[in-house]
Image (tube, rainbow, N blue to C red; front, side, top):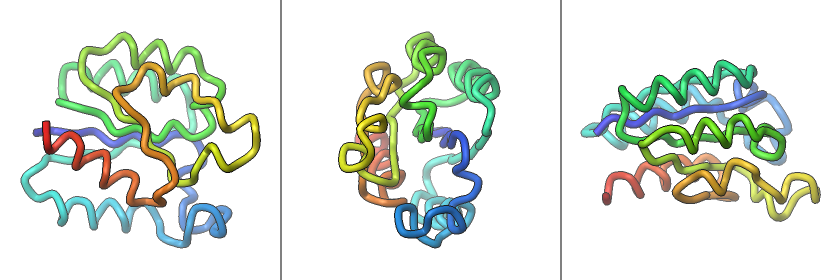
Length: 139
């Protein structure tokens, strides 16, 4: 199985940005943990602060991966284009969020991208990614 992990805007600052919400671990460190945890799964990682690059990567993923774990960051709440890109590919996407988006500001409680996804995992810190991978592993 080949799974692509996609992180959206500002997630390149994990470990430094709002540590009270997102923790002090970098995503690169957590990604290394995931690669050890899931040795039988071919994991790849992509991060961009640019909506078009995320859309392009989703289109690419359709022919090169079995599934996508995606943290769209703030684009979850604003991007119809990203939701349309998820709807346009045949492989399943699970949306993840490190924080519980339903316990935050009201504008973060609605995810435009979630309805295009197989499911959403939110509020379990970095472990949200692991839980999404385990979901695909069971399929």
